[in-house]
Length: 151
Image 1 (cartoon, rainbow, N blue to C red):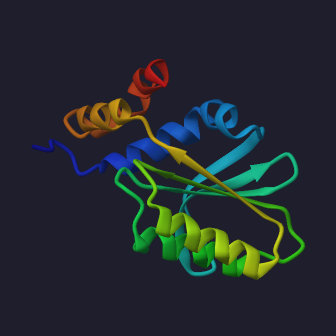
Image 2: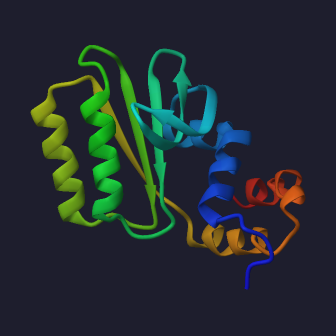
Image 3: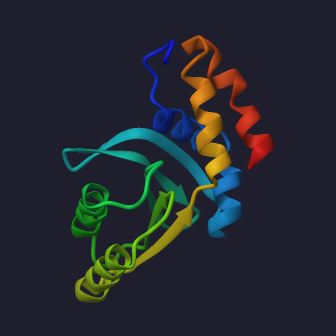
């Protein structure tokens, strides 16, 4: 039972914002800044920001990849400039082959400078996120270090 109105995915996105070095270590890019729930072309993107040279968009989900999130990834790809370096990171519990194939086909068809990175989230992290829905909302940020110690 939740004590607060904060969702697990939002907590995870806050964690990535406050500990960008975790994501940087996984993707091999230095991340300068991440904004949570940033509006982009009329839609909210989980996280977006910049690396040293590229724009970065992050779509996170705590479940298996699905078509709703695939459509968000496609939306991002449709709206980035053709000649602009773009990194799209999709984080999910697991990825199905048909979804990965759909994304790969989209990238090949678009002929844009897009690098897609898929990351499988550790199930232990997902389980830990439930704890954050039980604590006071104002204590969440100061307790994000617990996720950092687990990652």
